[in-house]
Amino acid sequence: MTTPGLPRRLRGLLDVLPEADTVADVAAGHGRLAVHLAARSRRVIATEATDGPYAELCRNLARWEATGRVEARRGDGLEPLAAGEVEGVVVAGLGARRLTRIAAQAPGRGVRWLALQCVQHPEELSAWVRAAGWRVVVETACEQRGRLYSTWVLEVAER
Image (cartoon, rainbow, N blue to C red; front, top):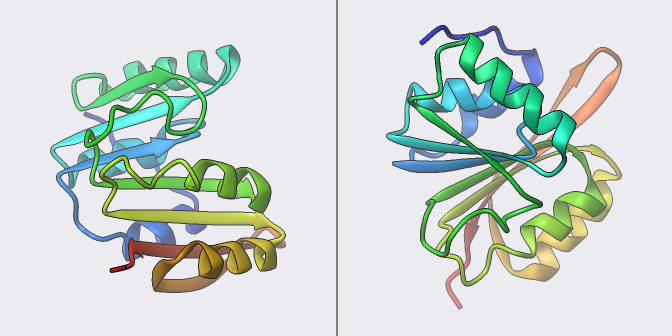
């Protein structure tokens, strides 16, 4: 497996992720993060919602010889994942509204932690996180190419 380079914002995200045997990279885009996750997790599922990005994800995984370590699936949000299939979910580089829509699908699916990296309206995501009852484990930010990326690692709060 060839390991592609990671942009600074994704390196920072990778550095704060909890360990997990099984992880999903939702809205995986180019798939670089999924390949890096495969180096530290037994199983990685990378998802993309639409045909074009899904095809790019599959091409990149083949190019990086990662198809044996990263399973690509087409579907929106957490829909391609069965309940209990993954311990952790990473969603990076989206705006707050899309992130909250995806994160709201996590309860009842056996997800132990979420990692969300927001590129727009982080205050909306922050408010949603607190209202939804997740426990904030990490809250940090990184600037890349003049853009601020806010990152949260969340765990299921004991109710």
